[in-house]
Image: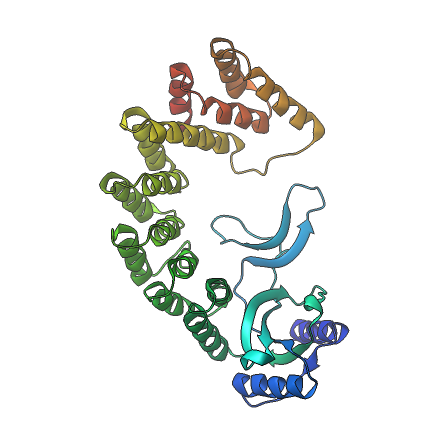
Length: 377
């Protein structure tokens, strides 16, 4: 209770410092109308309306953070899920606001959508901000969905940004709203934004089915199909690996094959993923896909060398990594055996990783056989 009151106090203090103008109303719509009247009375051609909402965990929005040891940095907007990376609580942003820049000459219609971290100070392009308080999820999702659906006819960027704001809400209805937008007649880049936001570590069965349908549908726009494939791959489970393998073998598009291959390489079933990538690297008729598979094999082996630990960035380690790169500039007959030795025996996992990644970028048979032996362990 004390922490909740403190959070509310700090949020209110931040708003006061930024000189937001509070407006009253029984609903979000009523507050927006009150803000429009206030802006018109003040002769303001453009103004923001802003409100807080219930933010999902595991996202960092509008941040500029570097950890104490310099090993991790976040700038701008970033989102993740806990199966990939667990955010430091000091990075995760749970006090966010949806800011709509409105044009009085266009009847107060939004011309821009932003999500800002309320804990940071902004100039807001010099326009006044009317603060609407905290919106319920139902009100916020409905307003943003309407903006996405109507905004697509005026500005795909506006509609896509509204979709991005929807995805940040902590509400079970988000997947339903995003799914409806993904199936809509909106421009393909807006739909692709909705599709990408549907991905996650534990998607509902109906979400998986929608993503699979979109990825397989040859009548669909290519960017929507790629987005669906990538979103499905984020599940990173056995079902996702099976889907990606099947899609790779059934589609003709090189872009989709490359996306499926990259998604499979990140799957948590390391043995199954390695077997698939090795198969493509060994037997695929497309030379570019074989090359990509070998690159991925080097990346997989490199991540295996780290063993899940965060890479160190001290000066000595960086110097040794640069030495590995320098060795790779020599003729392949010389550097491949040298880097295989480094990858086998060097005491620093970061240096072993560097060697493995570089070995994945050559067509040398000895390098390929070595990488296969590493990922097969």
